[in-house]
Amino acid sequence: MHRRLIEALLLCGLAFAAAGPIAAQQKQPPAGQPSIMDDEEDTVPASPPPQSAHSSRVRTRMAAPATDNPDLDVEDELAPSQIRQPIPPAVAMPTGGEKRMRSASHNMEAVPEEPATRRATRLAKPDVVGCDGVFGRDSSHAKLAKTYRSRNVAFTQVDAASGARVMASVLFAKDPKRRLEVWWSKPATRTDTHLIVINGRSDWIAPGEIRLGLTLAELEKLNGKPFKLLGFNKDRVATLSDWNGGQLAVLPGGCKLGLSLRADPKTSASALAAAPADRAFSSGDSALQAANPTVSEILLAY
Image 1: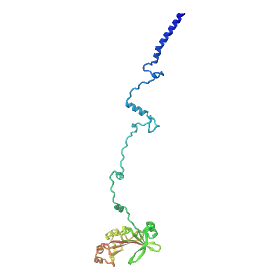
Image 2: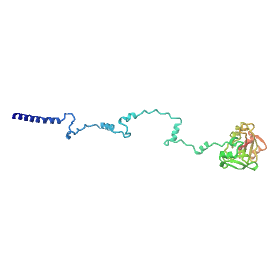
Image 3: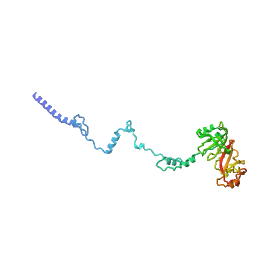
Image 4: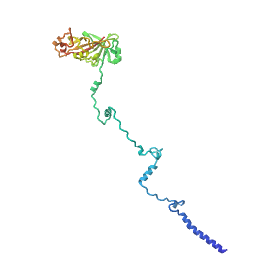
């Protein structure tokens, strides 16, 4: 019995002796396998392998969220190759485009601008009077004032024949270049046009392109043929007597065109005496042409 007990004890001792190395072997993980033990000294991670700078930048760019649009995932972002688009062909410059570009650019040479005086002369339209509308037979001072503004139309005295004075409506009385007289058949009511007078230095143009300063030759051209005038009076003025059936004999609107022509200041008294006022002369007569007269007054009469 004692011998059996001793044998049992010996067997137990041998079992405990064998269990130690086995447990130590179980604590050492096989080569290349991760440890599943909770011991602190066994959980120290191995040093990561070295990485190149390029792979680090790639991983950082791929992992970092988009800053411009946080709602986009990395897969939703466009690559630079997707943004590049082919350049469309050049469009032809429209007509006049080069000039417009020169005018618009401050860095390019500007197109020279014409002087203000020349531009104003070119853009200014001459005043034209006719035998209709506001200058028709049935016109009035009120119509003139409405068309040209009341401050530019005055009812005042003007010179008549033999030194007399009559009342008339005067347009732009203070501007010699735009001055125009309108006489009325009924001065009391300032109605019914009787006479329209262009004189002095006025730039108004009458029907048929008649204006102050025209010569005998220019009048003949506009009339289409020679016409007749009475000779020079004491004021050195010759007056129209007959258009001789020319183009200026009849005007649209029913008014009649009358003219006065003043001799050149250099004309001698003897030359004027050759064309006296009590006789009619053709515009082609040498006595009239020697005085070189030009239009000094234009009348439109009803």
